[in-house]
Amino acid sequence: MSPGRTFVEKVIDSHALDPADEGLYRRVRIDALLGHDATIALLVDEFERRNLKVWDPDRVIFTNDHFSPPATAERADISNKFLCFARAKKIRHLMMDRGICHQLLVESPLCRPGALIVGADSHTIMGGGVGACATGMGSTDILFALATGTTWMRKPPSIQIVFRGTLPTNCSGRDIILELLRLLGEAGAQYRALEFWDRAEPKLSQDDRFAISNMAVEIGGKFGVFVPDEVTRTYCANRGDVQPIDDVQPDPDAEYERTLEIDLSKLTPRVAKPWSPANVVPISEAPEVPLTVAFLGSCSSARLSDIREAAEEVAGKQISPNVRFVVIPASVQVFSDALRAGYVQTLTDAGAVFNQSSCGPCGGIDKGVLGATDVCISTSNRNFRGRMGHWESQTYLASARSVARAAVLGRLSPELYED
Amino acid sequence: MHVISGKAWVFGDNLNTDVIHPPEFFSLDPDRVRAGLFHKLDPQIQPNLEPGDVLVGGHNFGCGSSRETSMRSLKLNQIGAIVAIDFARIFFRNATNNGLPCLVFRNAADKERISAGDRLNLDIERAVLQLPDASEIALEPPGAFIRQIWEAGGLLSMLG
Ligand code: SF4
Image (cartoon, rainbow over all chains, first blue to last red; front, side, top):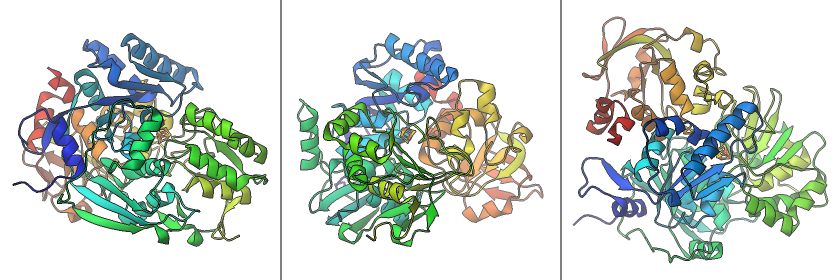
């Protein structure tokens, strides 16, 4: 008999359309498809030229988030091209200016445990935070999937990551994933799935899980999936899911390429230095660096708990006069929750500026991009050279708490947590 | 797509798609997409590319964003092929779907035998890269599925 199967193997098998495992690639059906203005606009002409139909407009989530609202006439044209296409195809979940696509995906019941999802953006992998096998692809793959509801996929080997112990209160999911990047490197999970087992006490929060799954792609991962548990079920129930959850679980004798046990009790806040998200050190070993920009935003972070932690750090204080602190909640839902909780007031009083939910400066796109002399501390996922703006600018990646602390102090410092 | 001939452009490890094609060159205008290739890394690369040129990379070539403008730009600049130690997953899929051959060295150490500007002949059938002194470097032959997509003329030709 074949050995036990990993979580991802089970999900791929249950979506396979070809009977046997023919070679490495299998044709699979997908449960949902995610796209946004920038990458969907790239496939519109080809889709129309071939006279194709969307396989199931009810299972498609399209979001206008990169150029939201557009800052230049060219971007307005791209956005309009995308919106016209989405409306003509009667895309059921077309969301204009409602937040970042990956956050909107996980706010949707389409992103369910055990689902197979593809998206026209690399951070689609974040759906793994609720146990979905979600992965990013380019526009050509997405065009094919949009027209057929299928794609080709290789069954990846899995790396099992087991979290144990108790996460210290000054750490979050961001510090965990930065630590994993330090341990595994930028290609440590290339062509592989990361299967996260949460044995921490208490269990990691759903927001922490999203932060971890989001940056699994920075390790090269194809999927970064949390094995569904009560945290997942509670999240889905609170989201208002009506359909019961398929309880997919890995077999006890599943084969993993390797297993990594992480004792969270030993974790301390981390930072990734320029220009790689894997260039990670403990903040206590970070260099002393004056900052000009602090950014709390992107799909990687900027959820309610991140904004709460930042608000805790700045309450009753002032952001350093040398620092511009830009906050962009990951979705309008998050923004509205943060408003109600008073965090927006606290952060605004301290000197932070809020922009509307969108990608913002994360991909060097919108307000808040960096100039040549800017040094930024950011909750985003990539500090690649030039990504957030000028080629000479520098970005450090850290948690929302660390970003807020550094914004108040005006610099990154090994003493950031010594008070 | 039998023998590809062009000069070598050599890069290091973890060459990400933001460096290959900076986000500010994201556009639907082909001229702008073409001009953006490696623009921030070195603005002298793109104007000096010739059709058929071969990019030589290290580990994890093409990591990062899935934005297919990087691929469009490589195609618009008529890059002939990419040879690297290994490729990031999404990039490899995008390249395959668009018919841009991406091959890996059989021995990673062979990358060091190639110098920037070398005239290379890449024989895809034999999976061999020929250097200017006529010596050869062995590559991994592409798998059957990858060939199938190339032979169909890209993924979209398989839409039926
Ligand atoms: S927030 Fe940044 S990483 Fe996330 S989808 Fe937008 S540009 Fe990409």
